[in-house]
Length: 171
Image 1 (cartoon, rainbow, N blue to C red):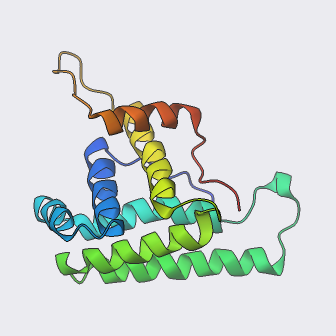
Image 2: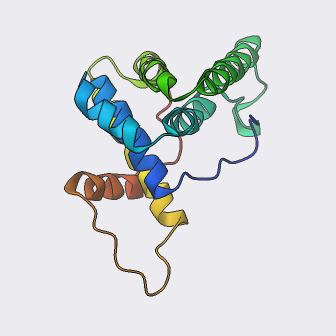
């Protein structure tokens, strides 16, 4: 995991699958979560991919415009690396790890990205909007392909993503 290399956006399918699963787990909708996991055997890896896009911007060293980093910023960066390495190792154990990884990502979003007046579900929707928007911008449909039908939620995510920066909100 590099702090300076930009992350390639997820594919549209990967972004939608990962965030559908995260939102189902967050809502304690066990049946929906199971369906999403069964439909995507690589769910643990997709969750780690989504987590990377959430964790790296929050824990990365600030850019040169922010001035000289402090010991705290170096510690936060190291913690982000350890966190992501742990998730990557955990994901290698197989598909049964998806729920634990999802709950860990949700807890990270709750602790680091959710404001006091917000619900973590709102934060996940914002993060999904960014991920889906980046995927749509980066992976357009091939010429002559049938248009993709987006659900109302995905259309709303696309609209929000167009107005949102690529990094999660600053704390």
